[in-house]
Image (cartoon, rainbow, N blue to C red; front, side):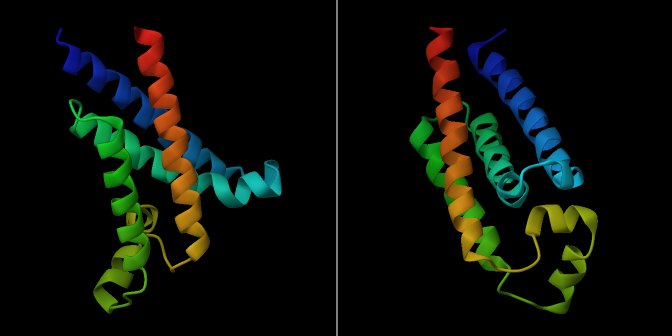
Amino acid sequence: MTAATRKRIIYTFMIIVTIILGLSSRKYDDALPLFVAENAGDMLWAMMVYFGFRFLLVRSDLRTAIILSLLFSFGIEFSQLYQADWINQLRGTVLGALILGHGFLAADLIRYCFGVMAAAVLDHMIIILKR
């Protein structure tokens, strides 16, 4: 098994765990502290985006994944300013809402920054531990 394949397996695992945590943070938000319930979902979404870029670009460095993750996340958030019928119909589906969101919130941009940074720190720690 190549190093790239091993990394992709790790990133797949990280994506799955992050999705489970993100969906759980939405479903069980009433059991979480208010701060966590309000912020965890968007942070975890951005973490999943980061791990997705690491999976796709396994040979790239952390900075590339950070930049692409922030650009993608910010792009999705700013796309919520666009309110055409066709995209609102997509947002009306469960998958569309999870990917595209509903309405622009500047606070989400901050949550995305923290989520991407948390994922990058976790990723860096895993890289160090593997040495």
